[in-house]
Image (cartoon, rainbow, N blue to C red; front, side, top):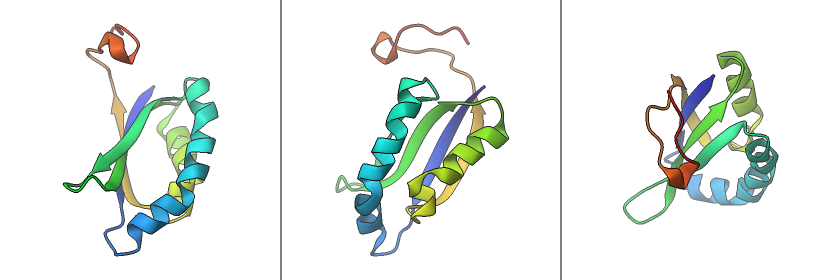
Length: 105
């Protein structure tokens, strides 16, 4: 089952530094999940100045509980970067070839 994750960073003055401090760990831990097909895409939401303020992720898991457990282990959660996240079951209706071609949904 696919899940869309919408995660919001903290809004305090230290939030950008918290993200940057653990970003290398986050990316290193995500890499095997991308390679296995668990994480299909991910990226940062940006503010008007181009600063990162949250994340969007599309992941595949057997259940919402499994998806939530994966997120709870992420350093962006354990390190206090993501102050809140939403997890939504998701079905792809259309997909550009840029993102890997057509997927019936």
